[in-house]
Length: 288
Ligand SMILES: Nc1ncnc2c1ncn2[C@@H]1O[C@H](COP(=O)(O)OP(=O)(O)OP(=O)(O)O)[C@@H](O)[C@H]1O
Ligand SMILES: [Mg+2]
Image 1 (cartoon, rainbow, N blue to C red):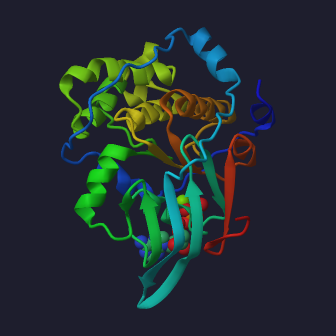
Image 2: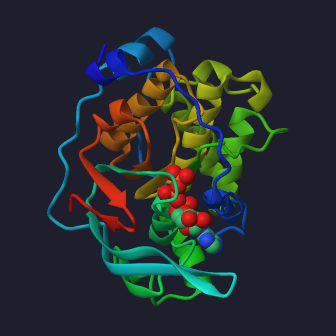
């Protein structure tokens, strides 16, 4: 068993999160998408799945060129006619296949930053460059288009469609991303196998445990092959073992799908698997 899993304590947190706005954005009209390429198959046997995920090896991060660059970003909100300065000059880089975690006290600005990185919101000052795109300059339509093709979102509260099965939830995400119908079956199967749910494909969310629901949400978020996966407290509502499973799945996704993951967490034991941790205090990173 991996060290951070052994030490991890159980704990839950029940806070609504403002990033849930992103769930709606995933249900928008279809966008075009490049054709699928051959995927490596992953065993649907639960024992083989456990063996594969019990000791997720840190992947070698590709530092040759950042996937996303945040420079001097500031974000304020007007509250009761007064400006509330939430982000006060954020600088960060995310690299391909990197697992980055944002930590900080409640209200420190983690979700606000995640929304900016994901193109759901824009900064008042500063720059956000994602691949060749400038999020700080692009309009809503352009950011929505980039988001549908390139970014996946995972939320603390799973954000699944309650009446759809695991399979249908993942398929919906492919439909929304404009992936050709001929590719749905193999991609949905692959994604659900990747998260270890081969035997739960036709269960609806209420027929799944919390950890299983979060794994469906992960399969849904990665189905369209985004290059960046953003997760806001993805383990906060899970017990320690389910949280560990989710982190093992994240490591597997980075290794096999070559995605970058940026997530927020309050859990120090979860942070042990990060390639990099940014700590936010009063709207700035203190360890950058
Ligand atoms: N749309 C908004 N309008 C006004 N204030 C906002 C808005 N969004 C966030 N804030 C404020 O910005 C601050 C940071 O919020 P944020 O959600 O980013 O914190 P957080 O670090 O994610 O906290 P938590 O750990 O509790 O999720 C909070 O004080 C919040 O009230
Ligand atoms: Mg938050």
